[in-house]
Length: 305
Image (tube, rainbow, N blue to C red; front, side, top):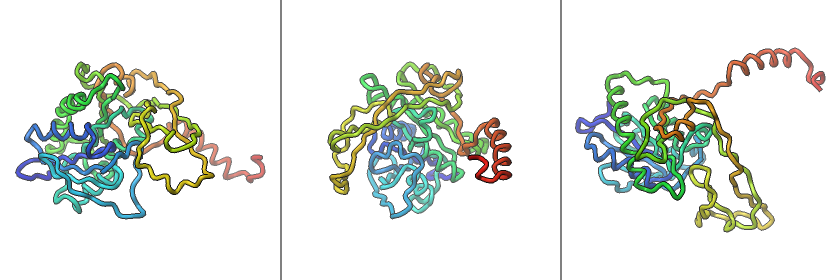
């Protein structure tokens, strides 16, 4: 294990940015244990819903910043960039024993996992064979408050500690990483529950707008569209004849399976969902296309018309 002063090392990243309250609450809770060496490598600005995108065409910058009890860098890249850079030994002298991505403002359940930069931060560590966790708090507008991030972090510290014990004892399974969602009423949560990724999805649409100022910024949980757009959005390259469109919420697709992540989260559980990175379709699809592809290869293209 990567040890500094006989302490195991945890690297923290996120997609809400290095100044986000969720990341700071997680850092403070882990530093307060006085048990771990904490590295922080997180985006220098919000990178919500960038999924597993990486920076390829230009360099990224890493600026050292002060966060008590840590060695921290703000990076001009995506969450996946941050994890990759942080584990490369180009930035930190040692490779972390565990990567924790979060705490995200808004849940990451169901199909939202595909969009999530928070989950991507943990998935990238999985690609590097480093155990990892993504953590999200189910922020509810006009109900949640910033102290809830501290409660969420404290509720997840036992999971982090238990994982590190298994990692040290070489019992941790290398074929998955964990996605954790904490319910909005975290002070009265019902405990941990092992779940499976469900199929919940926020249905998105587009509306034409007259100017960038008219657009609204989508929040991290993709459910609240009434946040003013960032003032620093660069519109100088948009020509006058261009059409402008802004995302809007159209509805939601729910999953009624009893053991899915979103349903259990709404019931008040802290959901713990093992994930991997291979997205294979079900056996029924494999069987269908096995016969279908054979017929395609045997028939001239004109016969299918």
